[in-house]
Each structure stands twice: as structure tokens, then as C-alpha cells.
Image (cartoon, rainbow, N blue to C red):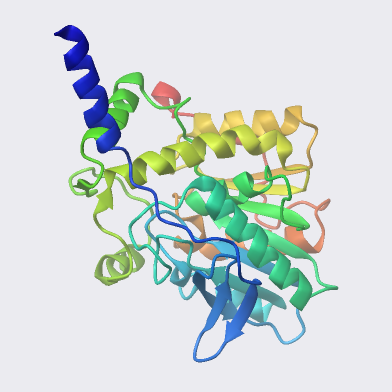
Length: 333
């Protein structure tokens, strides 16, 4: 009887396994479509919407990757896209699979598939701007995807990474009880959804921007548990990928970040430094998780532009320092 019960439970768990987005065969030539709206066509035919902020004579190009449940519009006003374009830096933001107007809204595509999309779009941009430096810039989940992409067998050919509060809080940092609860929920009720109501967490001090996000129907408000489960797996992969980056890294973090623990960021920096990588870090005393859209966002933008121009000079904000000293709080925060 015990064996029967175990078999039935195992069958139930398999039947309710986390759902992954279906991906087609790679039979298409990747390309950029510019009809009524710009879209990047992936090898399987998936079309990823693009938001392009074009500089007149670009001295650099940024491939911008949004955070979890967000989409490319996060780089529009009050985000940094228009500002960078005025500084001579073209910014191209994409909707990643499962988010915004991309295929599979609300479903998880898998960290490898998302990373391969980044590599494909980077190759298209490299061909379009052959003599211009190309960088990945990722916010939160986008930073994790950028890191994961650099661990591919054929990583994107970029000149560096800009990671704004990268999501590197994976299974290794997750409380054992919460990790077990998430695994169980993802296998018993993968399509159940969670909201952030009642958490009392502030991702930014830009309240008006947060209100706009709350009204935007393309910003996901109810997250599937299996998608959250996939995110934690991505964060784990990003943490593991740190030594594989082999490109200059600018890592940005806010002392008031309530989303990604400072201890996880510090651990990531240690892994980058142990691999003898070129790492510049900046800690913003008044910065929250959404540094690129906070009230003091422009000083972050200026630091990024300065780093792109000359990595060896101090950042204009004066916030260039060891992130391990960035308000490490009680309990590993």
C-alpha cells in the first residue's frame, strides 16, 4: 500500500509539473522587422517587440532587458531610453518571452531560451551597428538573463554588461522552508497565482511611476507560481554564470533595495572578482531596486554613460565603492 501511495503521489507531481512555454523549431533566419512597429524575429519564428531610442550618431548601443513582470516600456520615460539617445547612445529594449507583448504572456520560457534570445538579438544589433560598441543593460531579472547569456556555448558578442540590481537571489540564498514551499506549490498548483498585495515592499521612491505601472495592463500583476519557480532557477543560473562573463561589468545597487538582498549582490561580486574580471561597482545611498527609474535616476544614468565612455575614471556620482559596504542589513540584507 505504501508503494502504491508513493507511486500515486509521484504521478500527481509529474502531472502537475511546472508548465514551460512551448518553443518552435529553429527554422527561421533571425531578423529585425520594421513595419508598424519594430520586432526581432527569433529562430523559432517568435517575434519580440522592440522599443528603439535612436541616437543621431551613436557612439554606443545598449540592448536593454527589463525586469520580472515588466516589459520594454520600462526604458521609456521616466526610464533612461530618451536620455541616452540624447547623449549619443542608442538604446534598444525588447519584450522578453512571457512578458509585455511577446509570445506566451505570463508563462515561463526557460532561462536558456531567454538567454539564447538575447544572443540572437545582440547578433542582429552587432550586424546593424558593426563599428559601434554594444553593451547589455539589464534591470533585476534582465540583469540575470544577461549574466546567463554569457554562459552560453556561443555567448553574445558584446563589449560589456551593465547590471542594475541583478536578480541573483536563487535557491542558494532562499530560506529552506520557503524553497521547499515554492517547489511543492510549483508541482501541485503550478497555475495558481500570487500577487504582491500586503507585502509592504517598496521597489522605488518614484511613487508616480509605480502608480503608472499599476494601471498598465501589460505589467503582470498576478504571477503564476511555476513562473516564479522558473525565476528562482534563473537567478541560480545567473549566480553560477558570474565567472563565465569574461567582459567588463558595471554593477549598480541601491542601499534601500528591498527586493534583492545585499548579501546576494556581495556574493556575486566576490565571484566576479575571484575570476579576475574587470568589475566596477556603485552603491547609491538613496537608491531603491528600480535604480533606473528612481527619483535620483539621472545620477545613475550619468554613471552608466561615463563608464561607457571611459571605464578607468571615477564615476561622476562619487558612488564607486565596494558593494559589500552598501548597508548590509541584519539577517543577511
